[in-house]
Figure 1 (tube, rainbow, N blue to C red):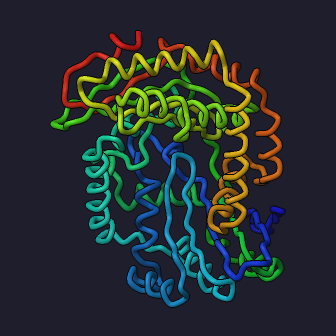
Figure 2 (cartoon, rainbow, N blue to C red):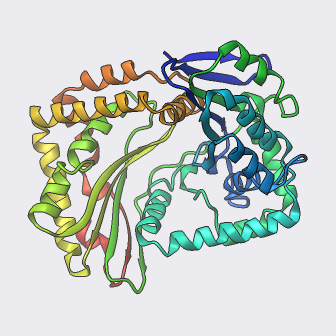
Length: 415
């Protein structure tokens, strides 16, 4: 059972003890992501994450990696729209050796200007890699245009222009504001001693600011948009998306189940109709993407250039069927079983459980509970699915992004 511990310094620990394992997953979650940036410094959260591995007052980049290797730890970090997480997984006896390294990175990183210039080039290559990968590129684009009315429209990586503007002063200013004690959650899952953990963590973050700054979140009316990028490629990659609900909404679990039935698995309607029966696409799926204050329903297909119109037409037909007829008892039962299985699997992986604990607490300010989630899934009815389907069935409300080798106008196909 997950437990929440408030440290005197203002930081929160969320922990789940699993006595039958000999390992532990430890993560430091920071309220830092692209939603807290502006057009000038877009990409700074992700840039800081990279710089955390480039050296501290006591370790250079090589020593950070070697010290983690000495304790047999697998460690990494990632930046999202609303959070950055630094984490490792190791055997329980090496927990505090690993945690000391992460805290050293978090508190004592040097942000050396020479290293910044090197790493800026690495991030620029990362941006190019996304642009050169059409299915990644189209997902990045659909996120920007469907979220054009809120701060989620900013990309995590930033742009070459914004990266060029991020010097050491800009980076440090953002770091001091967002890396504050009350904006940090320590998440841990595995076999550990709770009292020892609290003693170890209590005095580690005194150098950080106590409070996050007040931030104003500007939300404007949703506006439907289209983006078609033409490249010399052999396949068209299409994303269709429409706004839905946040992860804090009562319908969050309903959308997750509905997505599974519609396009989230190999037995889903989209996969069976568009790929298996009609052979229109190698890859076709849907996703329910939810953040703490917003969300969208996203449909993706990778198709031959001459199958664009037919594929979009079939997606529209499936949306109409879902809104008119809903789902069957068998489909709902299967989706519930899949959701329950996924949650039970998460109990058996300390890293997955740690990610859930940290994300739920930092972004939704509540504890992650497998039993609660399963109960919510099992309470969903066919009428609930119909209600969610009604929110996504209107094609005239969808944005469209495409990376393709041919000219086409999405408005001709989706109205």
